[in-house]
Structure formats: C-alpha cells, structure tokens
Amino acid sequence: MIKALLITKRFLSFVVISTMMFCFIMVSPIGRVVEKEINRHFEAIHHRLNTHNLTVVDKIEGRILYGSMILIGKFIYPEGAAILEHYINGDGTELVLEADYIKESPVIIRNLASMRNGETRIVTLHQDEDRRLSYALNPFRLRKDQHKVQLWQEIKFLKPQSVFTILDFGLFKLKIPDGLIHILKPKRFMVRCEWETI
Image (tube, rainbow, N blue to C red; front, side, top):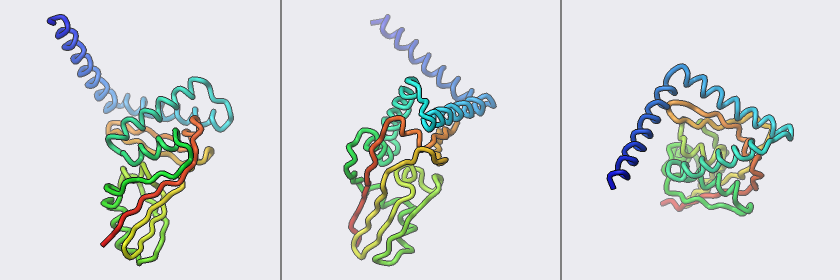
C-alpha cells in the first residue's frame, strides 16, 4: 500500500514538473521555434500528400493527430469533433447536429437579426468571432424562415488548397492545412442543423 502511494506520488510529481517545463518552454522564445517547426512539419506532410509521397509514418501521425482532435474536441468543441469524426469514419450519409449551441452563437444571432424571412445567405467567419462554430462550420449556408432556421454545409476539404485551421492552445498555435485530412481518405457528406423559432 505504501509502495503504491509512493509510486503514485512520484508519478504525479513527474506530471506536474513536466507540465510546468512544457509551459515554461512554450512561453519562452524557444516555444516560438518549437511552434514554427511543428507547423513546418505539418506543411511538409501536406506537400508529400499532394505529391503522392506519403510515408507510413505520415499516415500514423495523421491518425494520431485527427484522433486526438476528435477526442479532445468532444469536450471543448463537440460540433467540430462530430463533423471531423463523421468525415473520417462515416459513410457519407448526412449528419444532423444538435442546435443547442449553434442557435446561441453570436455569429448566428447577428446574421439572423439582419435577415428577412425566406432569405438564404452564405456565412463566413473569422475564428476569433466564434472559435467553436468556426471549428465546425465555416463557411455555411443559413436560411431564415418565419418559424424555422436551417443551416447546412457540404463537408469536403480540397487537397491542394492553401486554407489552414489554426488550433489555438493559448501558449502556442498549430497551423493545420485543411487538406491534410486526406491522409485518412475521408468521405464527403452534408451536415445540417435546424431549429424552430417563435
């Protein structure tokens, strides 16, 4: 029992010290170098994908990267995680998102306030406007009717495009090329969300 407590205490000390060291490195000038090299690494994998020179390690890293994004995202950005998981592991069928968060998004509220009944518009946003929504849908179509709101987007990332998603971890930012997901041979699909209004 005492031995198990000592092992647990040592493990927790290791985790705390490792976390502190990681934070110290990432806020220092060294952290900017690490961030830049990680982002270059993702760009290099994306280049190998586009030139049909992927390695086995690239594919493993892709599985780890996107699997981690889905796992962590389920707690922080559940709509984005659901879309990512369906894109990678789904069969191309339509995905319907719950409206709980989406209908309360400041981007949605602002757009709906300036729309007429029967109007459909393409909405684009900067990640800083609503990170949770931007990780799920950007751009998307939004339709306002008298008693109903509909939102939809075809999920299909192009390989050679120079569009990136910025994953902001506070201490550092990862710049992931959207086309990198093609390492995992995703299946395009339509995502929808709708809710009734008063």
